[in-house]
Image (cartoon, rainbow, N blue to C red; front, side):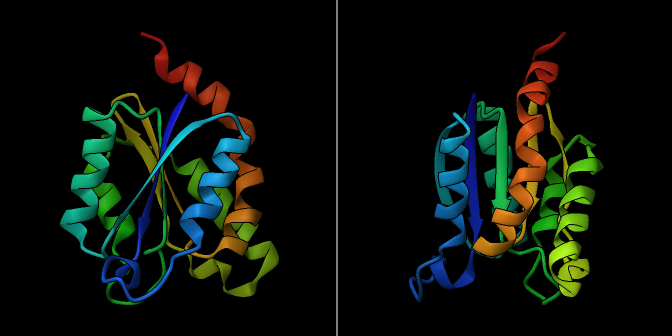
Length: 154
């Protein structure tokens, strides 16, 4: 199964810092047996939407996992960009990530990530911190094989 990790990061895209959430999510994907690529895009709604569409339609990824841009600052536009890219919502993933985040940190409730389908690609927004990703991944990972099988059906 092929997956892409898309890091949404203004500082990384401007060369001002090293993002660690993307590589952390890539490690988890690889450990789960996913053939994984990693890209970074700035906190720009159109750029994020374009990257999601390209990874789903042109690159044919089964999964696209974003990290970052799901908070409440003005440039946190990953959920809106994801909604622009998907055909249908699959809210259980985002709801479960939010619920798990809330178990670990009261502020987890502020996470605005969404999840949905574009064609045969599942797109899931993860929080932008390695700690939150490590806490969220065990909720999502056990469902991936079945999700992939379902997406492949006619």
